[in-house]
Image 1 (tube, rainbow, N blue to C red):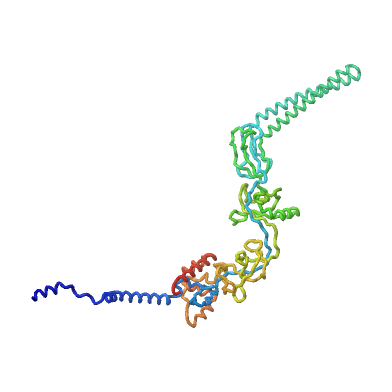
Image 2: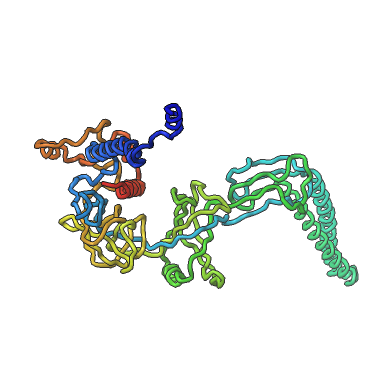
Length: 489
C-alpha cells in the first residue's frame, strides 16, 4: 500500500511557479535599471559637456546672441539672432558701360607668296615665324635660264638699233639729194618708211628686254607685305612654279591686327554716333577665362547690315599688338566700352539681391540692425554696380552673410577677407572660455579676438580660417542643422 502510494506520488509533475509574470519581472528588472542609469548618465554628460567639444556653438565674435523663447538660448536659432556679416561702403565713382562678347582675331592682311617664274629653289632667306618687312628677300630661284633670255633680247635690240641708225643716216642723205633734184621723191618716201619700221622694231626689242629683265627679277622672291612669316611650304632644291597651290610661304600682318565680334543691334545708334563724332571707342581683349588682359584697341568700323538671325551686328576693332600677344584665329573675350557714367552711386555687385519686391540691398544701421532698400541696378564695372535708389555715400551695405538676414535683424560686422578677421591669426591650442568674475576683464583685454573662436579646437580654427566666405556660410548652416536635429539642444 505504501509502495503504491509512493509510486503515484513520483509520477505526479513537480509543482509549477506561482506566476510567470513574476519570473519575467525578476529577469527584466536588472536590465531596465541598467538602461535607466546609462540614459541618465548620457543626458547628464550631454548637458555638462565642455563648450569647446562641438563646433556647432561657433557664433558671432561678440557672443551676444539673443535667446528666443523656446530655443534654449541657442545661437543662430532664428531671425533675431546676431548674424555675422561683411559690409562695404556705398560710394560715388565713374562706372563704365560695357558690352561683353566673344571675338576672333584676324590678320589685317594675309598674303601667300608664290613663285612668279619656274625654276629650282636655291635659297631661303627667312626663318619660320620671324617678322619681315615689305620688299625683304625671302627666297632665290635659279636665274641662269632667264639671264640667258635677257642677254638674247638685249642682242636683238642692239642689232635692230644699228639698222635704225644706218637708216637714219641714209634718210638724211636722201633729203639732201632730193633738194638738188638728184633722186626721185619716191626714194625719199621709201627711206622714211624704212626708218619708221626700224623704230617699231627697236621698240619691240626694248619691250622684250624689259620683259626678260622683269622675269629675271622674279627669281629673287620678296615679301609683298610686312608681317610674320609662317612655315615654309617647299624645301631647297625643288622646282617651284607659279601654279603651286601652297606657294613658298604665307605672311600675316599682325602689327597692327584686327578683331571681329558681334554686339546686340540695340547698341548700333550709340556706336555709329560716336564713330561719326570721331570719338575713340575702347575695346579690351581678354583671355577666354577673363583672368588676364591681352591688349587694348579701338573700334575701327562696323558692318553695313544687321544679321537678322541673331539681331547682332559685326564690329571690327584694331589693336597695335606690339607685344604680339594676339594671333590670327585666336578666340578672346571682348569688353566694348560704350559710355561712362560719371559720379554714379555704386555698390558692390554682391550686395544687390533679388526678391519679391525686386532688387534690393541690406543697409546696416547705427544700432547694428539691417534694413532693406529697393534699388534699380545699372551697369557693372569691375565688381561695382551703378544703382538708383535711396542710398547715400558711406552707408554700409551687406555683401556677405545675407542668406539668414531679415528686416530689423541684429548683425555683427566681420572682415570680408577671412585672413583679416579677428581671431584668424590666433595661436594653436585655443583654451576653453573662462567663466567667473574675471571673464569680462579677459574679454576687454582680448577684444580683438572673438570669443567664439576660443570654443574651436586648433584644427577647427585652422580649417575655418582657410575657408572662403561662401564655404564658411555653408559650414555654419550645416552646424546649425546638426544642432537643430539633436534632441535636448
